[in-house]
Length: 449
Image (tube, helix red, strand yellow):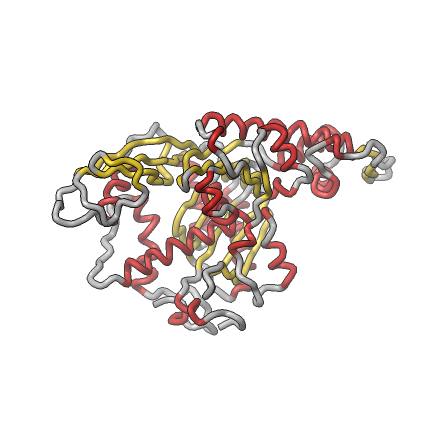
């Protein structure tokens, strides 16, 4: 047991989050500490060259990246990684609202969890357009015997159970490609999680979700949006623009190499041109003895501002399309690698008229004495919001499954739905068989009961 870790964390399952992004592949290993925070045991990163705008475009390169990141995280955490929670994004992601109704036959007992699960399972049977499959079914408000606006109906008496659902779907081929990459890297997928939902877990507070907030996760290839109101997810969208679009604009606009464009963006980039002085000049080395190139910081900012305004306009369109524009008291929270761009919150406020802050995932992290300080400090960056969010989601699901297994006389049946199999089957199997996924110097019984 690591120094400074509460003994109550002994029973906490070790979980792995896998973020397959457009610019980086990240594997984070962690568990819940004794104080309820997330304790990071290890992290591995690799360059992502097989993913374009959130969708796998080269299986082999993506598998190599996953293997490299998993190996690094495994060595650092001393955990043999077998099962991962994987993020999914991309322009193919769609969301829709649907209403489900379930008439209960067991009138003697109050509404139980199995009634809600039956209602959710029915939603997975919805007929989707060809080539699409359902990724998430998220209950919003419930109605019990025509009594609306109920958030948690468990324990209530009632016959007719209704619910509004937020359903998220994606292309079958994109989902299969992600699962294939994970499988080819000798790993199993515990659950497939929409990336903006994961990011919201790591950077948003419950108060913000209740008040009304927009999460904008600006990644390399995509910008993910999730809108919450009264603690409920109301709208999700994925925009096919991100930090890489800005880099390409700089490359073309300033006539520099791509790696130079990326450095210019991260070191000197600004989303507001008027915040920069006229006389600030950057000198970029020329190719093969050619003269160095001089670039004005203000001109660089004009290039960046033009693209970021376009991205924010897309975000604002989604906010208006959701119908919640006037009910977002907490405004906008930006996260992801793109959120590190200087003066971006001011530009977002200027374009949308909503309050804006940068979301950091550090409030969920426990103090860490295992990782080197520089690595631990890096984890507090918005860059890792999705990876840490995937970890939090995975830990919550693992704890939920452990609670179900502990209940006396409860037998968890194998779910009929393929989707349900993906969500619950692997962890159930792990608990039942006591499968090893921790290296020899840490005992299984410390973490898995």
